Image: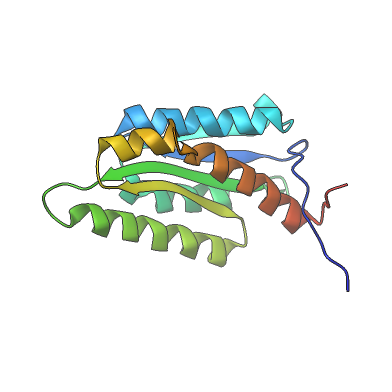
Length: 161
């Protein structure tokens, strides 16, 4: 049996971060965490794009556009990272938005074959958003970015040394 463990090396890879402006205070922290992770893994600044959309509901379309974008004969981006934050209000609207974003992002990944990582927080309150965007529970943006590196390397067949 042979096991394949993808590399954490982001050199020579291209990434697109699609980020929701709604709850931007927390999303900005997710973006910062994702960028720090990509840079720490060797990603070239010129091969990272950040695109902002109005809210988490719009993330799948932006992810699809990025995943389908071409540069020459190849895909422009090796992976897409979607970042957003949906906080529960008085109604179930937050769940509908979070579910739609999640299902849409999954569909984009499966339809295009490009890794699309879901870094959308669906939280009960601002304290949970704070804790998961660089607080006591880490940074979901950083975690999604690391997963993007690994999935891009899995797709390329680049193994950890």
